[in-house]
Image (tube, rainbow, N blue to C red; front, side):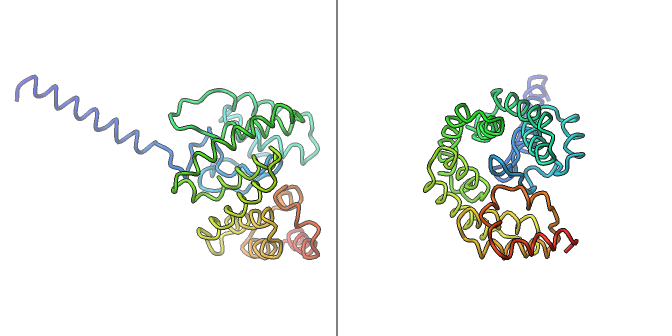
Length: 261
């Protein structure tokens, strides 16, 4: 084997390894990169359940406080921590976390694909800080990017993407458009529902509640509780469920969770 041949083979091998690493690390539409996007961040003022895309981000305050020490640039974790701090009455800590989420999500990413998620998170953080004048145009911008991404049939199967689009439209004043997006979120969530999985059932309950399907939403929530869902904090604060809190069956569900089901 000549020296030139050995060089060619070495270059080819290096290129092959680099390609394999890139493919292995490339985030798919259903599993975004942890640190840049939380697949189920939820409504601008809600705290969503975990899905595969953000499984490394804790739900509880202690876990979140520790997580942001290890991953200080994860703007989704800061946004979530801000909400949990607010729910627990720590307004000063909440404002600090929302500012961090806003600052971190405003920094341009290095990905080639147009990403609506950092825009959505920044709009949500500013909205939490009471800066609606600054947040509204960002919600409009995020909605436009989501709409372009959802033209892709694969991406359009993601219920959480329709859910986020709905909140962008609502915060932009498009109530009818928000309802349409949430209705589509219901359809996609129903088609991928994992029977007996509390997270899947809880998310479906949220989408159904937003789409004004109250009885089916309550039934999904009951099934989630039966399957092991037990976050009283989520039930009391998740904005997605606001329409259900006026329903007679709501107090029964709360009592079951308070009593350990």
